[in-house]
Image (cartoon, rainbow, N blue to C red; front, side, top):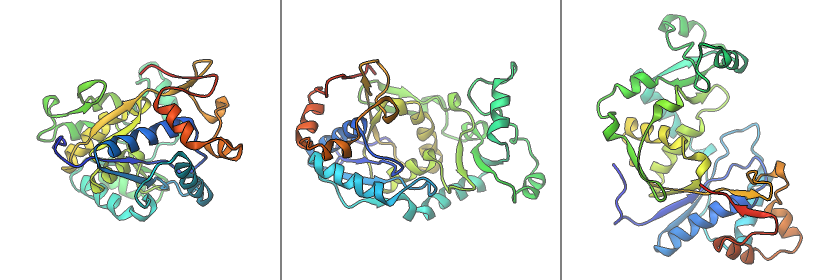
Length: 292
């Protein structure tokens, strides 16, 4: 079900507490906040802390301080680490229907397969897909992940090309092409859900009507649209915005010298002025908005 325009707008900002936010994060948060605010809707904050090895409580506190500094009001935060049962239920349904399979390949093995002359360039080559159930069961004590069996998923009723589409604010009606992403990972032994599965389940469970995020996640939406169809979940409207770049044209990121919001706060910069600048396409000297 594609979301209708008559619904109350519910947007969200969903950072991972694995580091400090920078201006690129601020742009996404501001756009999501303003979209909901202009429509008299709700702006949610979801902390995507499912990666227990990298998530830090101190980064959560900094995120809250950053959003307050920018002048963005949000509902009380929801934590993915408290929602694991939702992901388990979704994965169990896909397992019951035979739409996922365990994969025991290491990263090195996958990289070697992908670089072989006869292999695909980016997508997983499906090495573990043909494993017999008994053989897979005998190896369940080994490190493994769960991958979507794309061919079986697309063979399900209602998965025809004309049925799988979404609406993007900039691109218009987009036909989903999940085949371009291959048999993506939906869960790992050390993480109960991948980004693809968790974000799809969470957006539906929280009633998100409008997803605002960078254009770098546009291709991921192909997978999310397929998962929505498989799990019977509604499809939000999408707003993939241009990224911020430095003077060298590189994507704005900490490794390229992007100032963190925390550093700007500590330096006495006015957060509401920063937010207004971002709304109007004005950025600190040396930064610009990349083309979509």
